[in-house]
Image (tube, rainbow, N blue to C red):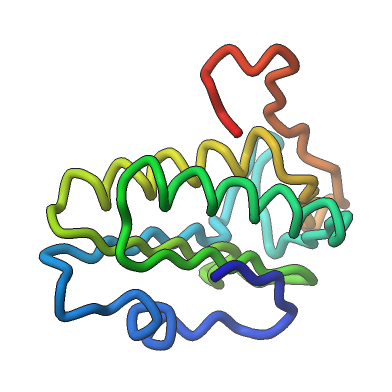
Length: 145
């Protein structure tokens, strides 16, 4: 399951979505707004996305990850809007028969999101705001979807 939302991400619901009596492992990754960035202190972050393309890119990641690591459950939720320090911006959960696959799937997924999903963030502080430059691989050298 993939979703792009504007409301608070319910971590318990994410874990329920991936739970399975056949899985021996469930891994949860949470990306949160931290209180600083390269330019200094941060009070909040404004996330924007090209939603149609973002959903399509997340769908490709989901198809690849579920197949590659033979996952039993998989969820990615990315939040948009203005988020305060400490709030969850992205939740990724994977369940599989064994822990290695679930861990690898989550790690791959967050890296793939950073590289290929059109989501932008603006750091906001007392001194002003600035768009944060993303990480893009034009030649797909790391094999990301």
